[in-house]
Image (cartoon, rainbow, N blue to C red; front, top):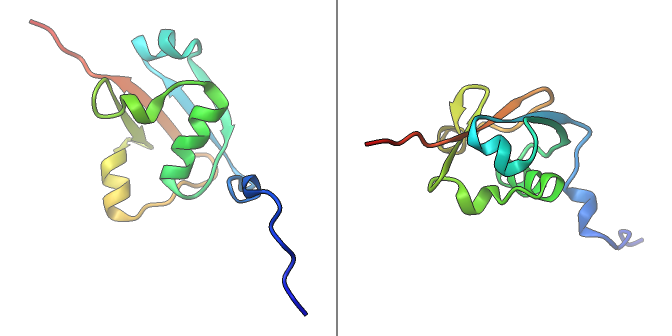
Length: 101
């Protein structure tokens, strides 16, 4: 008896969980929204792809250059380093870097 073939890779992307994504300051005008609730995945990198797919905001291209991400107040780099997974009800904040002269 064999295993059923996986016909669509999209099935693995979604879990039955939702997170809130907030766009602060200039990020909100770039994204065209201030806040959205999206379907998410426990893997932070997959969740970034899902944010892009569901909002059209090119988050992976701009992260670390123009914007930083906070997940429940912790930097995205920290959650990756510590192996923290995304969970139901988390809040992801997209914040532009502040600069001046």
